[in-house]
Every structure is written in C-alpha cells, then in structure tokens.
Length: 249
Image (cartoon, rainbow, N blue to C red):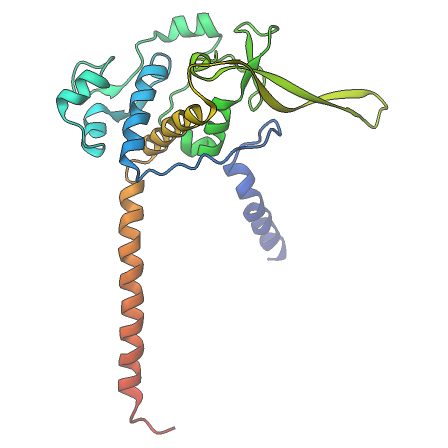
C-alpha cells in the first residue's frame, strides 16, 4: 500500500511537467490572450488565413463555425477568410500538398487545431516572436525557443529581422560556452514593436479559440454557476437555521 501511495505521489508531481513540454530554456512571454474579445478573434482569423493557412491546416475547425462564433456573415466569410475551401462547411485545410511540404521543409507542417492546448498560448506567442537571423540554417533564420526549426520566418516583413545576443560563461570543464540570452532588432519591419505584439497576440488568441471553441461560452456560464451556488449556500444556511431554531441543545 505504501508503494502504491508513493507511485501516486510521483505521478501527481510529474503531471505538470508532462502537460507542458520542455523548451530550450528561453523564457516564455505572457501572451495575454482573451478568447472573449471578439474583435481580437476576428483579426486573428484574418492573420491566420493570410499567414498560416498556406502551410498549416486547422482541420478540426470549419469555416461555418468560425462565421457563427465570430459574428461574420457568409459574404464577409467568403471575401475575407475563405481562400482554400469552396463550401462554408469545409474544414480549414491548407492547399499545400504533403509530399511537396516534406520535400521543401523535410517535414510536413503540423496541423494547428490543438497547438494552443498542447504547447500553451505563451509558448506559441513566444515562438512567433523569437526568430532571428542565422546564416547557417537553410532558411536563414533560427528560433530562440525551438532551436533548428525548419519553419521560415513568415512574419519577417512585419517584425523585421532580429539578431541574437549571447552571454559567455565558463563551465565546470574550464571552457567558455555561449548561451543565447536575448534578441534585439537588426532591421525594422512594416510594424512597430507594439503593433507586431498585438498582431501575434490576436493570432494566438484565434488559435486558442480554435483549440477549444466553447471556452469563452464555458467561462461566461461559469460565472452564473458560481453565483447560483453562492445563492444556494446562503439559502441552505438560513433554511438550516430556521429548522433548528427550536431544537434544544
């Protein structure tokens, strides 16, 4: 019995580590997303179809559901978001053939339907902001959070190009080692730093919505559930006092 309890304790303590994948040690930034912000979700949907859908699918999301949840008419949907589907109830699938993707990148770009849940919104937010110039890589860029990624910096025109900042430390072996400690701007993009942060936040917000479309509704409903429970507890307390007021101790 003692061994079983010990194993249960190990599982409970290890669960948070399993739920959040290990990174390179580069600090995550707070995404600050809000799936209840309809305007942000609409902008994020626009960003996704223009910059992500060319390589990545969101196969568990349909255009029709996006239109319903984001308060878009069918005309707005077709004119602004439908570039790969022909019917409103089609899934959001990339038009890139998997065989060509493996040939160009060495791997098929992953589906992004659940990326915000599997990696976390802070991870996705930091990843999109952490590309930097690296001439040794085939795409000319690397990523501080996911080293040696094969993904090109598709947002370079908006963010600009960053360069890495290293710190030299001496290890236990007496040798000097360089560690990536930050990134700094090298060339400017079309957006200011604040505008780009907002762009990425909206995009990640949309990915968070895609990973769990009912999240905003569940949160809104949860407030009413808590209020109901508080009222019920108060009612039960006063009812108990009424029943027991004549009972002699």
